Amino acid sequence: MYPAFAEVWARNLPSISERVGTIERAAMAAEDGELDGELAARAHSAAHKLSGSLGSFGLAHGSKLARELERRFEAGQGNVDVAGLADLAAALRAEIQR
Image (cartoon, rainbow, N blue to C red; front, top):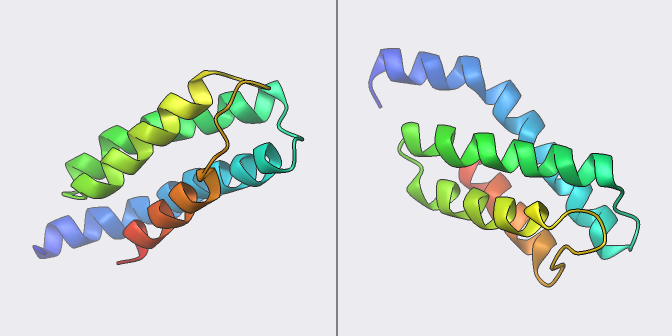
């Protein structure tokens, strides 16, 4: 990784990690049947932002995972496809920690 690129990544990593955390919390809430509309909307927004930004950093797989999470959270509270949601969130976390 180029030094300037690494510096930009390091500067953005806290907000990227925070967005993944939002998705992780929403995934757990959805699996527990406790996802509310506000958290679903925040997770959708976080996934949307990550799908674009991770691609810009060369993390194509992370971008793909974020797009799938965005698609799932787009349905909103009560309509989220929860099958494998936590696994997707964990895979996304692993991508940003590589």
